[in-house]
Image (cartoon, rainbow, N blue to C red; front, side, top):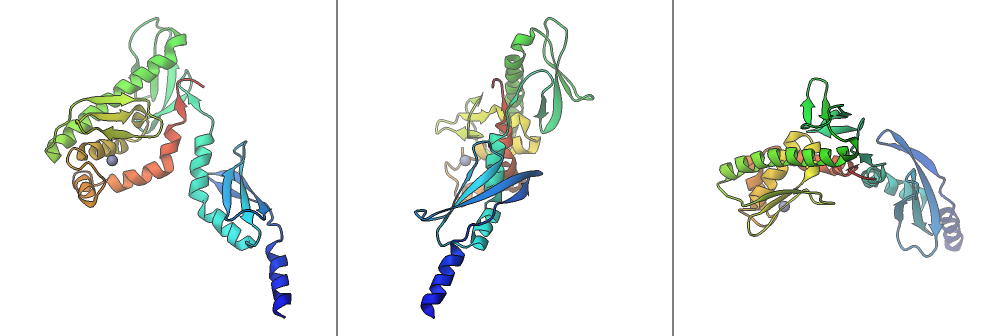
Length: 251
Ligand SMILES: [Zn+2]
């Protein structure tokens, strides 16, 4: 009997798991399963064309456990699909979320002049040689980021009674900000593409490191005392952070 049961369980757990489709971030994602007798644990990865996921499951894992794993992995899938989404190159006609509000990049016919904002029409007006538009726009966005981050950092330094040295704004791949032991603050220019309260939180976070060079309870207490929206902002990065990395000056 036990032998028969074992045989039955074995046969049942080795049946293929049918592929299916789930909707993540308003788009269908195909989930394909593959059994691998050598797999020690369940493994999920994006397909090469980023239209679905391939799930490798160990020999004896049943379908419902494999599907439950996929359910649990939805945030992971969402994050990685966003990273694979086509890049938005800063150029005429591209729409970029300036301070979290979509603005269209518009090349004007003026030969020279400064980049200006047309807030009513939500447009960023860029004069000059179109060949240099992308680079000029990025410089402008960096300058906007630096202005906002300098204001926010100074405000938090005052309320937390600390100081800092230099502020630099860079093209960082993974970090949003950092604070050196010497007191230099460094920020990611893409923060200008996030809503203002998000940029504001990153400034509060880095300035708070002037008092605590760690992420211990005292550090978080300081951040939350001065920036009560810190938890909301941290949560925002989890679901939207990868999206900001889609913006680039070149393909
Ligand atoms: Zn930190």
